[in-house]
Every structure is written in structure tokens, then in C-alpha cells.
Image (cartoon, rainbow, N blue to C red; front, side, top):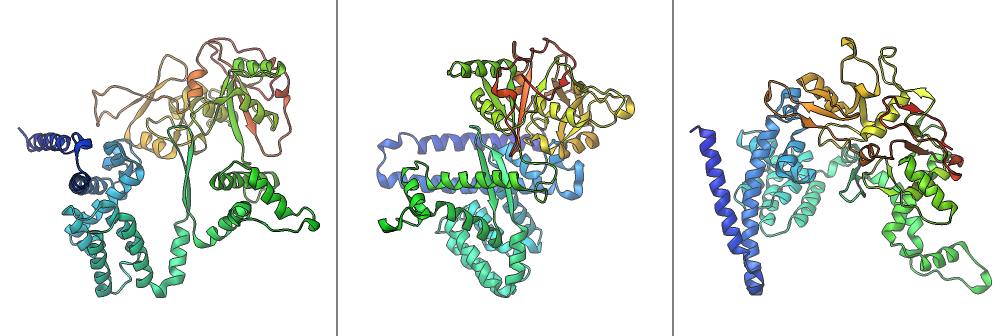
Length: 517
């Protein structure tokens, strides 16, 4: 038996023992007294901190083997992941934020053990993590707050601050420790206000990620100057609620403030909902009035894909003052919306449909062009829904069209021979020997691992990111209509009855049409 096999057996035995112990500790919790429930939770939390410390050390080692210096030969890249955090997230089945914390703390522990400056100054906190006395989140809060000033502060003063935070971390929750670490950073870096302001601005970001239920979560950081603009604008919109009652004499007549306050009384939206709606409206108005300074040639748009049969059903129901049962999909969501919503969007905008089997621009260009055309990119986006690499969530706007059969080797620039991949996975595929293979069904692909990685592994399915692609292959839903809602667009012919003939089943060559109905 090899050393790895013995260690694996030991890990499995320890996990089994721990699982049994936890089952006993948390068994029949309703029969426990208040004091016993709390005591047991404290003990389980300590075990959890020890497990987090072990996970952090392993995550730090994964990060060490996946560093930027390794390029596409690093551990994470060889496994098909963008970075160490993505691989750790998959292995731990955690959130990206939790994986990033494991990597940060684990990397600092490894650096301190190697005598590096980055981790050495935080030894009191890191030792507390290894001993199970300090929570991983608390240590991560200290690292994120004091890391940027660790090399600038006077060593003895910095050591006193870290020691004090380590002591507080043993008795305080992680949120309180993170706030204390932020205050300590300001104390250590009083003379660096301008530099700190610059660093804060460099950290600004906005990330929009999908939720399981189809919602989108906005995560971001605003530097103080940007926050002043956004917060003041949102406060102005929500002022009737947040500012309390407005006082006006009846002889003054209706005032703007009075009308707004009255409207607020009948508005059922919460302050948070009103704030979000106001930001959406600001973006819509900006899109209508922008001369190209912000959005350039690519104006903001809402893109909707709806099957021809569903759209026609909705239009017929609308003619009869009824409600259809069809569905549609927004490009940025995997959760369907009603065809009525698609019709409403289309009635307020121009329409850019994709019709399979019609008579218009041919999307297959064979060997006449090296790069995929704009019309082909629209069709690929409707089919793939974004990067087709398994587990990747990059939207169509972040992708590149990949030739399954290389152009230099005689490949064709046709829809059936193209697939959308994000920049990272496109490079990974070319540099590490992965291959995409077409399946018998149109639009179906599988991913083949490099022979150096696992020559006997099974092909990996590459399902489209968007369920509309699967629905397009269902009977009676072959034609796909895409509506593009651009701010200020004129109402389109979708107000009337749709009369475009359905595409023929099994059509090989899709076409691009500029109008429906």
C-alpha cells in the first residue's frame, strides 16, 4: 500500500468517526436543556474551526500549485478551472466567497511557515486558526483589512495591533473582528489618506451573478466618490419614505413634494424595491439619451427568445382578451417568463428574430470567411446561451466563436461547426489539448480530455447554458424568435398576428430574418 493510500484510509476513518460523534452530539436536540444546546453548539463550532483550518491548508497548497507562474500547466488549469478558487469551490461545494477565504488564509499559513513576510506578521492570528480558537472568517477579515498596509506600518506597532486582534478574535464574532481590523488599518495608515483613496478606487467593481431561482445578485464595491453619486441619487428617489411626512398648507396648492409623499403612501413597494427600480429606470433613460459616450455602438438591450408556436398562441389569446400559456427566455436568465412578457417587450422595441427555414441571409458561409459573422454570433448566442464549457457561467457577450475543426485544417465557418467558449476556456482548449466533438444531434457537443490527463475517461457533455436551446428541439417549437429591446425602439409588427410559416423539422441550414408577421 502506498503512502497516499494509507493517508486516504486514515482520512476516511477520521471522517467516519467524526460523523458518528456529530450524530450523537446533535441527536434528539429537543430533549436538551437550553444550557446544553448552547454548550454543544460551542463544541461543534470548535470542531468546525479545526476542519476549516485543515481545509485552508489544503486550499493554500492547491493555490501554490495553480499559481500564475504555472500558466495553463498549473493544477487548476489542468483540471479545467479558471483559478485555484474555482477548483476549491467545486471540491468543497462551497460559494466562491468561501473558497476565496480558504485560499487567502491557507496561502498566508503556508507563507508564514516558509518564513515569508506576507504571512509572518499575522502569525498570532494564523496560529489561532490552526488551533481552532479563531474562526476562518475572522482571520480572513484581518488579512483583507491589514494586508494592504502590512508592509508600510512600523513593525512593532503592527505586531501590537495584530496581537490585540488575535486576542479579540478568540472571544468576538467574525463581523466584529473585521470591523475592528478596518479601524486598525485607518489608525496605522493615517498619513496615507491619498494613497488609500487611490487603492479604494482601484478596488471598485460590480459583479452580476445568477441565483438558482432565476434572480440576479448584484455584488459590488463603491469607492467613496462613486458612492456619493449613487447614494445621493437613490436617496433622492426614496426621500418621501425615508424623509418622513411632508408638511404643506392647503392654500399652497399641490406641490411636487406633496404629490410624491402622497404617492408613497399608496406605493406597496419596499424602500429596497423602490431603490432597485429607480436604478433600472436611470439605466433605461441613460440608454435612450446617450450619444455614444458611455455605451458606444452597443446600446443596452433586452433580448428575448420565444418559440414561434408560443408567440403565435400568445397573440391569438391577446386578440381574444385572454392569456396564452407560451413561455419565453431572457438571454440573461435560465428561468422562463411568460410569452405575454415577451410580447410586451417586443411592442416597446424593434425586433431581431431568428427564423429556422426562412428565406433571408444564409448563416452558413463555409470557407468564404475565416471569422464568424455578426448574424452567426446572434444565432450561436441563441443556441448556446453562453460558454458551453461544463460549469462555466460566462454569458454570450463574454465568449468567442470556436471552430470545432480548425480553419487552417480545412474547417468551415458554419453554425454546426462553431461553439461559444469564453476567452479562458478557449485558450485552455487550444493550449492544453482538449477537444470538442460534434454529436449526431444538431447543436450537441461533447468535450474530450487531453490524452496526457486521462486517456480512458468518458466524453463530457456540453449542454447549452440556456434551456431555450433544449426547448427549440422539442416538437412544434422549431422556429425561434428573438426580440431585441433597445431603448427608444419603435413598436414592431408583433402587435398583430404572427404569420411567418414555421420552419421545417430537421432543418440543417438556419436563416436570419429581419422581421416577423
